[in-house]
Length: 80
Image (cartoon, rainbow, N blue to C red; front, top):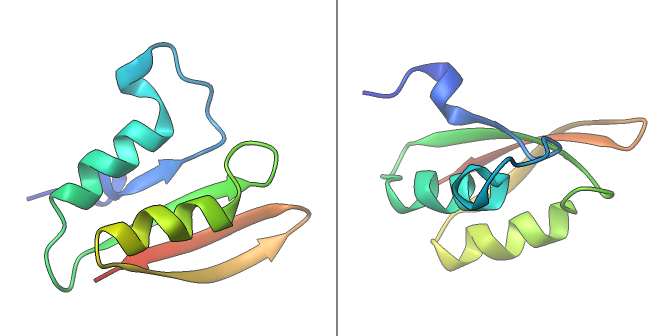
């Protein structure tokens, strides 16, 4: 079972390597998602725009709900 910290991805973080890139982490977590699972993400348009995350989520049959948007930073939840 994943802890809550395992299900939060900050897309603004600079990756040190390919496997640590936030989009790679997002893909991995979304592959493992089951109905009812949720992933919280934090992003901004400079890092990875929310539109890109919505496209990725749709490929996994998931949806994105924006929770909060303030000063260019978006908190959202991806769910199945």
